Image (cartoon, rainbow, N blue to C red; front, side):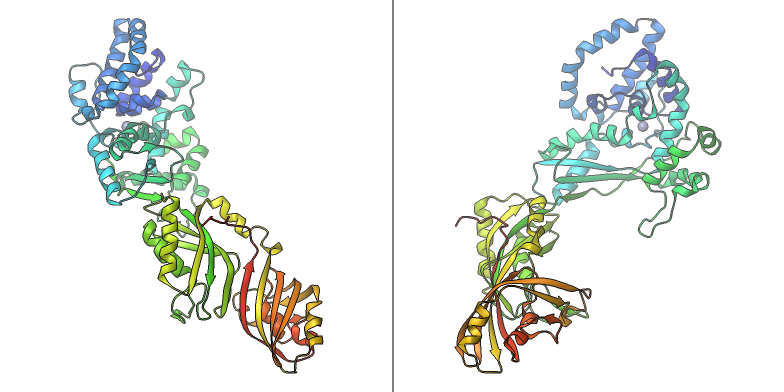
Length: 526
Ligand code: ZN
């Protein structure tokens, strides 16, 4: 049943004597069968002791063959009777058997595999997950353990290393099952069953559990002296003894040096680990679409200067608010294919945007529900309108940004000229094709963008007469062209510009984006 081999006997004896729990004994015997860890501690203890006494009676072969064939039905039985572990006390198992299993807190796992693999602990975890009111049908369990477990693990390994090496050529420290894995194997089935979810390593929903053991925190301290280069103080970490740093130091330290500085086997702790609060995190959901902006008094993102709000509302907030509440998300990141100024409208098919919704508690929406959400957004304000709303993948979102420089945009602008407009002027503008312009970073954005000269192309223009001093200018340009600066010249920072081309003072009174030629996200049929 436990798939133990004859060669494991001396190791089992040594570990039990050192104060290891039954599950840790299985780990050091490299038992890789999940079901072995799901049995109650009492059962595992009994079986370990029986296995040891078999050797004394010289009949190990017959029994181990017998238990092998019995494995599948009893594995099933154990899975279906999870309460078996609740009153599991190692003392009763040890009472009438030789050698004894000690009843103290395990020196290797500090109780993680003794006291937290039963239903009373998993029920706590599940109750706390349910409080988060997440919607999920699968989960992945993340376990964080105190860093000193690695030190204790190393000490236990050195304690049995000689026997392990002598009896089997292949056994190495890496073959030992990690506390983290054994713990997951022991409880994740119960957690999944209780929450009605399957346990998948690639699940978007992560349940994090963890333990601390302040009493033995100082176990790691000698490493700071013996391997000082492994422990660099960092701003963000509360302690330099991170799990990573401790593992790295243990890889470096020689056996002799370790044994001079740390007891082998480790000393028994007084108390067991304390469980940390269970936390949940759902992977981000990405939602994309296109928006129109019909207002000349609405910024794309909140307009805040020196901590003070300059204008009410923004495109991203108008879109985000209904999404945040429907997805019950903690926050969002907004991105779009370019952006327009506060006073610029975005018409036509709109501007592609994508939004990352952080830690959504609800993540499954069908097409009809997304359509309903789009309608909710559109009903909430007449300043914007959203279309093609859809859930996309993180990877697909990259399509919006890729090749952005090569994309084109179309604009419509209302232009004022100082001189009276003639038909010759309008024809002249209409005949300009593939005009290359150099734009120094505009004065108005210089506070947030580095100073640079960018070359952009005006692919074509068209002009239609309105009155003697006004005409409407249509532009088809490379994405990223500063249109206002192309018109007024930005004090000569954009060359050539419309002032220079028309040999007159000109200004831009209104600007609309007519189309953003990015073929993402795909259109959603009405
Ligand atoms: Zn243990």
